Length: 297
Ligand code: GDP
Ligand code: MG
Image (cartoon, rainbow, N blue to C red):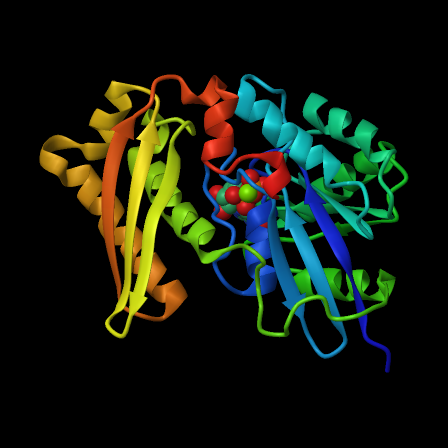
């Protein structure tokens, strides 16, 4: 039997379930998910390997209209990921009407290098009849190689999706060792854990303009010590993140620490600092400094 491998890009509007799908496939919490849009900032490569194939997934930040420096960076990154990959998966929510955002993306898909599949996600939220209708509407939008309805949340039909991807890949080498699930440095993943907890506990109050800088990650026999700074662009945000008598930052710290421990499988001691850098979102300099430079990913 020949071994197959290839690159698969996952694109779609924010909040359609891209990260949830990737997590389900990798059976681990790699890409963070949330009910607020735009949680994923950088392209995350998730690596799925079994006896027959290795699939390298790129979970992109959602494609949306740019509003500031960070937004336009995310857009470029997401759209570029349709080039040079073997397969493109467009994810769309089956429970929502086809909108302007979808048309925008579909238009760009004409430039994709490989076959484009439509993954209609969240089928757990609608009836069979509604799904049939939605399928018909999407069929008219684009010449998808195939439309695959799934529920990323409960895993419905995800195995089938994997089989289809595998059957479409060409013979190839194993790019990464079998046990690797991501090519991202651990620091990046640690920062994502912190950001996820901030978004989760502060809800909409703190927008996505916070950046997390891992200042230090030191490992010894006792475990890992991680020191991180949360950078926000307004003083009021700092107030929210710290909370009354530090209660909010304590919750963020404890919960992020727990996730880190689970992920790294060693004891973790996390220390958090919060600082204000005015208006960093629009300053390229900071985008680079904080690691959102396109050249890096
Ligand atoms: P992304 O922005 O495209 O990466 O979307 P996420 O993976 O972060 O998911 C956005 C939200 O949709 C989260 O609250 C998920 O739990 C939810 N979600 C994702 N897939 C499904 C699904 O199949 N069914 C339902 N009901 N919710 C889903
Ligand atoms: Mg995501």
